[in-house]
Image 1 (cartoon, rainbow, N blue to C red):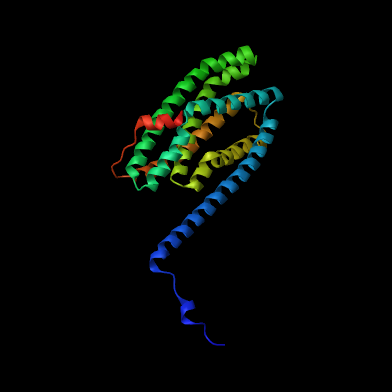
Image 2: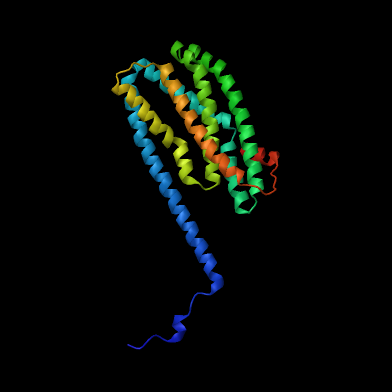
Length: 250
């Protein structure tokens, strides 16, 4: 066979190569992020079912219902306590880094955590009184009322952990975001509750809520330490208006 004509052997122009490399890098990042998210969701669902089964054996039916009620209150309270700062973290950090302005990303992170922590503390304090009233007057449960101070601490920690997770998403660190979103807490919970079950140790609602709060705190502390190392690398000058962040979060 004759070799193909020389005009068919033309190479891609050099100036087009970086775009192709960048496109391939974006594609790989998306695939990697998607695989982390999908794998994390599957693992979280599986571990969640296992943890619920363990709790069903550790707690009496009435106490199990009280635990799920407390969990629902913490979940709803954490949504309010975040004040929309979780979405602001993703948006402002990713946009600032995409523009090559790490200083603006750092300033946005500062605003997100200051406002988010303040919102979490306010809602946490309110939940002690309001949650106690709901427990006694609506749910008619002294068990829930007795656990509300611990639930308030769980709420505050949940807000801060969510802000850490969403900031990691802004950095496009999807692996870390998946781990600290729920995976680490679920793994630790499965180990702790599984150990209680295997050792035939008794448990009640307050102990379970206290353990859940402590495990969430461990996850939040580890995630915050890793995030702090990431934020320290953002050294350029840059500012983002607090009003701009707040107008988006509402």
